[in-house]
Length: 186
Image (cartoon, rainbow, N blue to C red; front, top):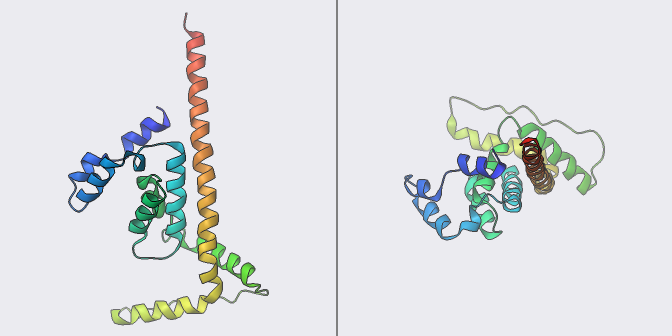
């Protein structure tokens, strides 16, 4: 199965989005703009890169922002939204470590990294959670804030290359396989 067929099979169609409550506007919007939905190598790679770049920055509306950025940049919207899922609690530590490293390099901070104190939440008082998280993030400081956009750009560019080259390799493999099959036929 080719990469584009697999992508078409896995991704929902604009028609199915129009039937989903809350996403009707998106299906209608995508039907009129097929270039935002087509599984094309450059558009999917760009959508994935934009989605990861937006997803690195901790925002509550990552998927919505990724979709808007993909629409503006004429990239694949589904790939942008799916790429935001690469930033999750399991990948948070490596991504933030990279961001703090890049931020320290850009800001010229040298020396040992001081670890922030453990995030202590009072589970009995949910109103105290946001101030505690805010305090903990402020202890991570300027290197994190300067490094997150840089990490997003670096990881997004890396994902673009991985998707683009990976898609190219799959197409090349499929073409060679078909040529071998044709050569074996009598």
